[in-house]
Amino acid sequence: MPGLRLRRPATDVVELAALSGRAGDLERIAAGRGTTLPAFGHALLKADRAAVCVRPARWLLLGPPAAPGASAAAWADACAGRGVAVDLSSGIVALDLAGPAVREVLARGCRLDLDPSIFPPGRAAATVMAQVSVILVATRAGVLLLTPSTTARHFGEWLEHTAAPFGIERAAALPFLSGDPHE
Image (cartoon, rainbow, N blue to C red; front, side, top):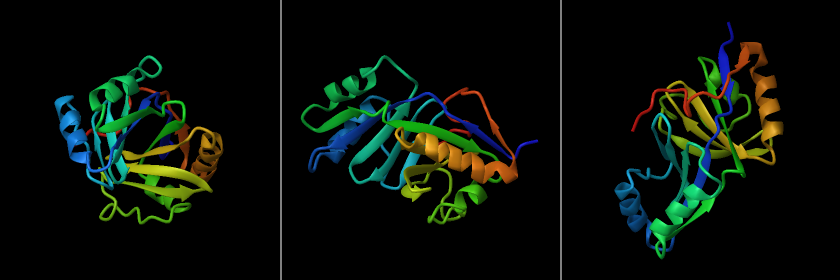
């Protein structure tokens, strides 16, 4: 039985960036739309959505696929004059790695301390792994990895090779996140 499961969930990715001094405005707008924007270094996860913050006053909003540009357009309209929304759906690939050996596998190529006491579910960070930019989001079942689509194949191959001694299974892309949602 494999110790790890790797999925590539289909997702829309919208980057929301506050104009200077307007982060509070975006937080209020997002709350009105049913989304909580997390603090820097954190992520809020639901079964079909995630909000991630690894840069001050900028958030990545992940959700189910929609018509191209539709999610970003809706956010851009809502945030006009206070922030910008950019569709990154074709620019970022999400990889969901779950299983008991996730942190051990990632530690082989990650400079971050992934110990659960330091990087518990709901934490997020940007780093470089296998010479590729990666955003890591700790979930209850493992780690959600976000990487540029231009280097996703290389990163995925590195990840599968590194995880091979632990047993890895490519799973069908089912729901957005494999772990228990939390806020």
